Length: 510
Image (cartoon, rainbow, N blue to C red; front, side, top):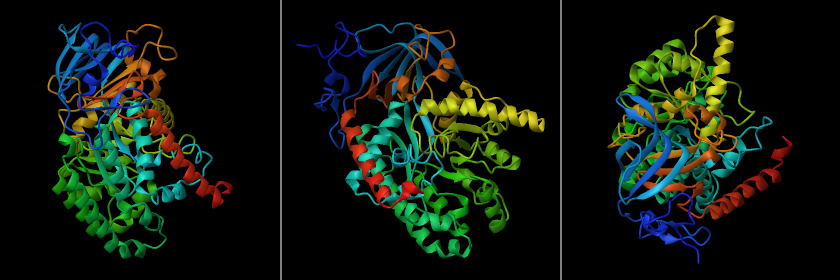
């Protein structure tokens, strides 16, 4: 008969260690496929966590600096970090063996659309529009929508992304995200995009601005529906769920509707998340309508009195970056936005860094691999900076992996005005991720002297452990808050339904 402790490579043996059931909570129930427990639905209040993660390196907060510490140990009790040190923490306590790995604060994505990744991935890269697949997703029943959301949230977790600023593409999708996030102890800042998918495209791609004005009444209804749902779950799961208001963009709103969004955001108290100055077209439209750039218009409406995350910003001006920097707002850079190979080009990541703006790496669609997007941010950002520096005699900063990791952790937390997130320090929330930096294809067989650089050779599959608020979600590279095989199977079945409808409509011949 196998030993449930010694069979698990992520928990060491000896008398210090306990069974898997004890590690994840006595009230959990067993999963037949993996033998790991998963909290019932909805998850009950679990016993306090108490364990140590031992890693070859950790990125530790010391004052206002993130410092690499070798041979690091971090103790978690309940939802917090209670001890950080170089070397072993003594005592009989459960341990996660992360030797060969780099321990980091949990990654924070400043821009996700959770249900929209897998249905479009692999079918838009030749240049097809994502519009029709996303419209079909929004017609799914709740069970199918939850299965699709779960698959994509599992990918986010699997790649180390513990906190999501989630702009669901409709209120129904936001409700689905919250159902999944509550089951799996995900830290979510969700909101339903307004206008949602069902109303968005005629407003966004209008040829007559009267369409925008005629849409005001319907948009105000959507804002109130999203506000009421957000209030009903605000602070749920011991504060893990903190909804934000998520207007689509400045060119799909009027002063009346945007003021309603901002009033709701102030009522919620968690901030604002939007596509902002996505391109030159949005900037020109808002200048024509309201006489200001999108960023300046939002400033005139008082938006920056709260946390603001603006995604993409390819249409931003030098003055816009100054506004963002002055208010401590965050630019959510999405290097794989539009899909691999389908994106219209690089984004202004080096410009934002040079201007001193807080920058974050967001997922957007259609890739949920957070580590891969960290790499893309650095690689594409350096290419963009070199081209612009040569062509215009600029002195744009060349992004580094340190910039990307800082933006994914501490920078995003500062933008959220949360000094308990984005850091490995005593008193911080226990949101943690380990990434293999020593194994095949990533490392050299042993931990190197500059482990952050090894992230440039890693991807989401290099992530070994993920913990949010003290709850283990991924252990030794396996999702443990649910039956991973079942999540994949159910997600695949829903995507196949979407693809079958596209096939029936002749979409693939477009």
